[in-house]
Length: 154
Image (cartoon, rainbow, N blue to C red):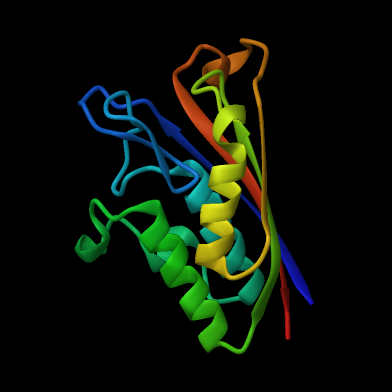
């Protein structure tokens, strides 16, 4: 078995773009800035998978120097991370994700997000969300973060 934890944080974009979170669209505008769709939950999960497997990390596998991943969805990045992990003879046992931010309100779509990500990964993905009680950059609604832990087995 191997386990890894990863963190992803993105600031809110000054450009109009969709807010993608946990492989779901939460709003047509008010999205996060990034090379891809900036889905912090999907990015943290993909990063944890890549780190646990020893393949690399999000920045080395899907970095900004890789133009083919510009504008990619978090679902596409997570799906490719799963494909790479499986190809390296690892199996995903489960993924846990903690979303950190003041908005959007996540609870009403929690089950939908868990189901979507679990189908994509082929293993249970459990998601929780919390705020920072208005402390720090995330508390000032400057962005959203996510912390993820992935467990792999052989």
